[in-house]
Amino acid sequence: MPPLNTSHPSPVTFSLMGIPGLEHLHVWIGIPFCSMYVVAVVGNVTILAVVRAERSLHEPMFLFLCMLSVTDLVLSTSTLPRMLCLFWLGAHDIAFAACLAQMFFIHSFTAMESGFFLAMAIDRYVAICHPLRHATILTHTHITIMGIIVVVRGVAFFSPHPILLRQLPYCRTRIIAHTYCEFMAVVKLACMDTGATKRYSLSMASIIGSCDAVLIAASYAFILHSVFHLPSREASFKALGTCGSHVCVILVFYSTAGFSIFTHRFGKNIPAHIHIFIANMYLLVPPFLNPIVYGVRTKKIREHVLGAIRAKAA
Image (cartoon, rainbow, N blue to C red; front, side, top):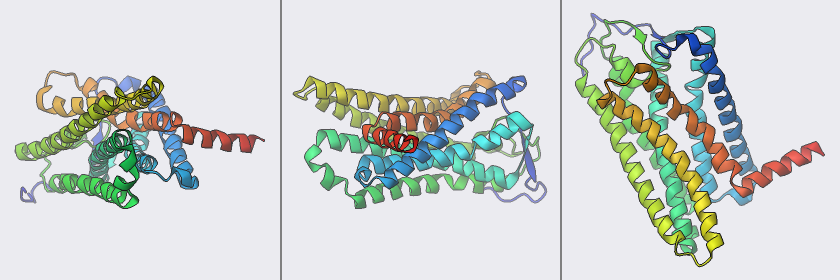
């Protein structure tokens, strides 16, 4: 850990640039971003309320879905309101402590999102490949332990990020060329060699993302193998439809997150506005899509919500 350089104290504030080259479009870009955030908040809060109210939904699939919804709410709320203030109000300045806190929430909860995707893939694998043992394998105790492991992993691996950045000397510009306090965007402002710090961040993100992605792919490979051996073609199509929508959401998350990670390592020639725009997508799109795919397409949740709407309209 680099020693504190007292000749270059940490800045009081940083200034977020936004999307370089697209500053004149910030107001218009904020409109779809805000719409996605509203859908994400309403959808995820609805899922949490429905599962809490309906005891028949206290099953592994829906409990993991609630964990994912909480993660989505924290992830989107830690970035979108501040981003919209930048786009619509021109509020570029962000306090150094607030910047570090935002960074911690973004990176740790992104890791949690990946972990809960893996937990849900494991649940689908057990439910489809070992249906008779599903209730005994995924008990409430095991679900709680899996949730704790995912949370602790995200916090443990990414807590060093703000600690490392707090101790770096900043003698260059305080302008962050991004829409939020991304670790790699902030570390570039330090006036010392930060190669080891950058390698730590990229290696942690790569290891967690690649391990989760490989295990999810393996789970769905076993699921597809079992689905194609189901005696009923209707059951096969139903299982494929459910898994297909889940896989689409997972692919969006890992493709955008992976693009952002590898751009830092290899994509020196990629325009900054493309990199930053896609970096925003992996924070916005999954929280927006998850309630639609996992909520609207889930019959029990859909029926409960429609029943509540009819009861209020009557």
